[in-house]
Image (cartoon, rainbow, N blue to C red; front, side, top):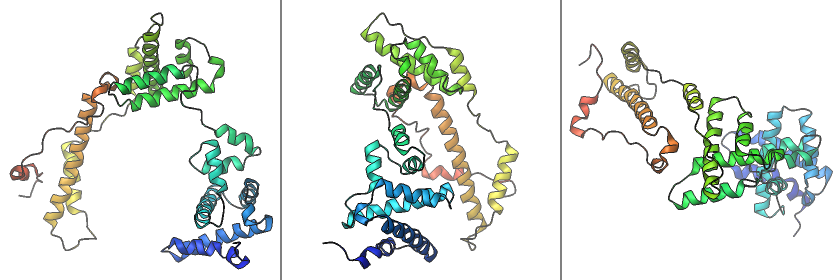
Length: 330
């Protein structure tokens, strides 16, 4: 049954009412945006004839008077409006969701950016993701991942790195058929970050080992210690607090006001915040110890799923001994 004209015009208000927004300002803002969009749609075509061309015209119309970030917010609200109309049976399908499904996209922002470009079709084709392991080395990498998972390894990080390498190969079709050393060298040139060079070397070694099992003539790429040293030196060093800085932190925790609990005794506040600070420092130490025990990660794949738990907690009867003390307090 076709809805009446009044019911069609009242769809934005019905959608905003079912959101149950707490702020009247937000409710009025949503209603203003959707009413403007709905008036534009009714001038262009019937609601049942919503298409990508109508949405593109509306986006170009609001871009002339709004910032790009506001255009994205408007499009996100309209996307939710479309989903609600589909759920109520007022619209056969969501045009924006159809575009995302057609081009294998998840977010709506790249779709909006492509529709605002001079050539939307070419922009949307450029957003289409590459198939998994679709390069000329893709079958060998896929078989290697399947083998490692069948042996009990999770292999999530290595699989993600192999997929990055495969996407690079698919984006560079002129490198098809080149030796693996040349492929790794060209991938390394894509970024000047030391961590990227280390990732390229590790992925190259992984792929070379997988190919070596198939063809013993293919040599395994050697490990360059210089690349590892440069990557590790570029990491942020941990900051070690001095005794004076720890004392200042504890004094601040003792004197800092607590508006939510003004009647709580100062000693309770002091000990609670002190435990919080010491707990944060203890977690930082445990995380650094965990990284030290797992370094380098690629040589200890079986323990990747095991999180370092640290020493067992002290018994409940001895936990008061772990409470930090402040000079001048007992």
